[in-house]
Image 1 (cartoon, rainbow, N blue to C red):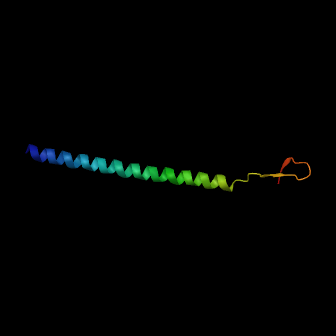
Image 2: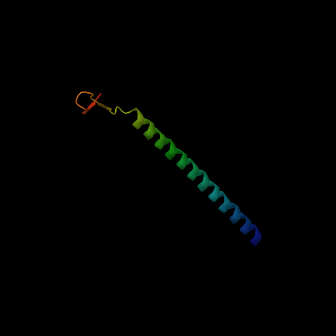
Image 3: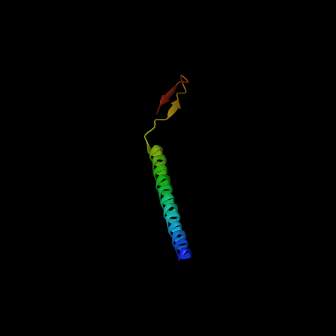
Length: 62
């Protein structure tokens, strides 16, 4: 009987490790998607660019 209990415990431990691995992969995937969305949003933000005025040499938005 004790080998059966040890086997059941090993299977239970394997199930817990598998669940933890799948959860970690899912969380990392969601975090990466969120990071990529933030990067894409930052690229589309309306950031003014500076252009040099040829007459004065000063930088002005535009």
